[in-house]
Amino acid sequence: MKSIAFHAAVALLALGAAGLSVKAQTPPVPTQAVAADMAEGEVRKIDKENGKITLRHGPIKQLDMPGMTMVFQVPDVALLDRVRVGDKVRFAASNAAGKLTVTQLQPAQ
Image (cartoon, rainbow, N blue to C red; front, side, top):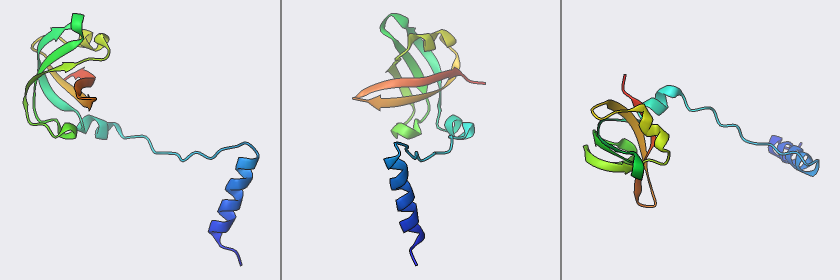
């Protein structure tokens, strides 16, 4: 009697030989989880010409960063059109190659 794993392996090999692939499906990330990962802050300065925004922010969990005021890069200056100086915002940031970058930005509700 052959195991289920053996039959699964044979089926995958057959699909591969037929030029088909089996992709693992990952469930979508719930909107609440994405929103929970966003930090809160206040816009202190907008520099569209240089693609930068200065935020006074609370802790940024994913960067293990305490609250402070700092300048972030913005990869798409269109993000800056959504906010004005003094606005309360929610944002996500990354530290790619040593450059702190705002990857998502939205007015706080």
